[in-house]
Length: 387
Image (cartoon, rainbow, N blue to C red; front, side, top):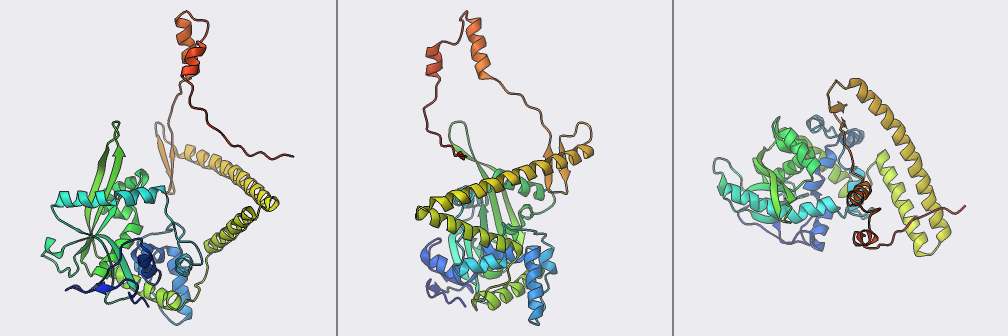
């Protein structure tokens, strides 16, 4: 059970226990490792994960109602499972280190919060990390907290959680598509799960979601595009089911250091990590025979996967063509795969240069012009099997 000893906490008039540690510091990671966090909330809502935990709980004489969780409709969450959540906390697998998209999002989160403040003429408290008083194993790291005084028509003893996102274009598109039907955040339902967890910790009746796009203008300046600000209501039916399954998972596995059941994707991940470790070991020990053989195994697997993909792609395109009406540019298959038809042409600049030279009465493009248009020389690396 998390104690908050690594990150000392203080209680003002608030119920939740605010931790005095900065985000992404060693102490912050330590308390996250022994708690159940908002960013992991969607893991327990994915259908396969929820069903596995429900069935496991039944063998222990515990009944979990997962119907409110399944209503969210999450079929996957970046391959996160109960086992990966446990293994990461136990140090069995590496913690997700982020990528270009997450790095860009973190860099621009402050801009999203500032945008919210200007639009709503409110000041928000930045980067609050807190444990729930009612459920001290639940942790939330808030991008910001909007003061309770901003809405006196409801009771919010800890203020309102503000979740700031700067998603990539395709994710923004999903938000706007969902906004046509209701809440934009339901276009990326794992954000919704994260906010419900935050409302549980903060005991808030609703949270605030802000999402912006950041695009670079021709002059190099950045501007905010397609902003979204919305209230996300608390869903008590969901939270009742979520709290039950999260508590069971935490008590049964995390708090007792017991390994949860593995799903097929977990076994694939583990095999991949073992293979990666073996390759790194071979390289480190200059065991080039082993390393090269593993490389060629990967090449052969990739070639087989490409061939299989091309085969399936051809059949999918044929199926879409059979459904395509005249003049239709987009065909949607199973509400998940978009087949887009477009026409394009290209310009051969080599032919353009030759034609311009000919029009100027020259037999060919002058060597001096070719030399002036050359790019900087750069080294290229190619791998080739020698038979």
